[in-house]
Amino acid sequence: MLARAGAPLTHGGTAVDLIARIGDSTHEIVVEPEPNAPEGATSGPSRLRVRVDGREHAIDLLPDDDGSGFSILLDGRPFDVALLEGGRGVRVGDRVFAIEIDEARRFRTRLAAARPHGLDRETVSAPMPGLVVAVPVAPGDAVSAGQTVAVIEAMKMQNELVAESAGRVHEVRARPGQVVESGAPLVILDRETA
Image 1: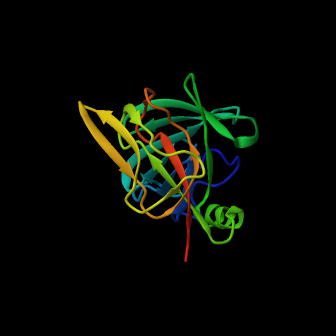
Image 2: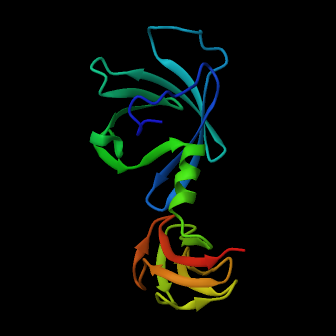
């Protein structure tokens, strides 16, 4: 919604379905005007309801005077947000995030066009912050469905992360001894699709 300069947040008062990609993780976003917000108001903040991966948030959005960013009140918490040059990221306060946001249909079409025919990617990610204990696979290794491809220790418990389906290891992004955040990609697999 913010990473496409000039893209409308809603279409004529109806919801807009978006997908945001941050690194290898994607998030589904639905933006719709607040039902009780005054129609066509030209001053004051826009009131929106935003669902990110099914979780609803209330947003008051006020563009800066110079059009370079927004002041946002997200669930009662204030943030200053600005687009980076070229729309490939956002600055929230003093932090910068590389993010790509597009309409869901267009995003899926681009993704399908970029994917080699007959192959699909599976990313095995950390389900929680923790310490990588083992990565028993290497690029090029064949894996079967249910095979352990990484082990993470969190809260004094070891969690084995498995491949959902058979395929081949495309890339290993973690190493034993590395501390990872929740959602960090650990192993990327190429799996055959029917």
